[in-house]
Image (cartoon, rainbow, N blue to C red; front, top):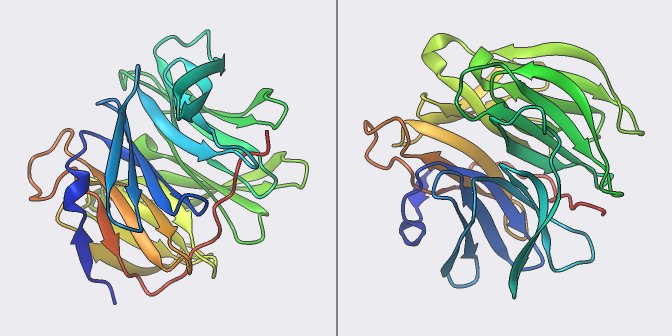
Length: 286
């Protein structure tokens, strides 16, 4: 079953991104980068809460054994407490790139955060891929991205997928147990009529689900990069995907109203029943 519904209580995002399933709170979090704001949808009663943010926010990740979160801001890595609301800066990975901001991130099974960056002006290929370790130290592992997007991991944790949206390319890296990357290769290049690859997630069978910015759909690709299926949605710029719910069989998809106006539901939050099961949400170990 691939029917979708629009979560009307979520409203419309200028640039919805970074959906995160939180089992501990039975809620879905996502960001509106441009508002900027953070939202939370309760899966218990459908209530939506929203917090204004002081600067552009690219993502939110839970911390293991704690009530607060890690977030990626234009100014760098930070922690976020919602009750009481408080943001504490950790540090900026790119002080030499003042026009950049953190754009998309996920935690791996070892509790490390993988975060990409991009030029906020879309003028230079100055984006990079960083790893934030539990000791709050970061390291750069790849560079030269127009728009770094969509980290995702194979079910066994041995492959990291990462996207340069501007180049319409999804890369695959071999990831060691120590968190080092090797054997970078092109996993998939998007055809022009597909739009641009944006946020991604993997399912329990190793399928890679990719959001099509400018393509109005999501697609599933097998581990061999073969297109398995596509699901059209009534928004032009689809931005990211996550599985949620107790059985990880509910799918939520974010979109953007930015740079469009052609889709009747641009900026909406969608829920789908894709007939697939996701992987558990990883938390930051720091």
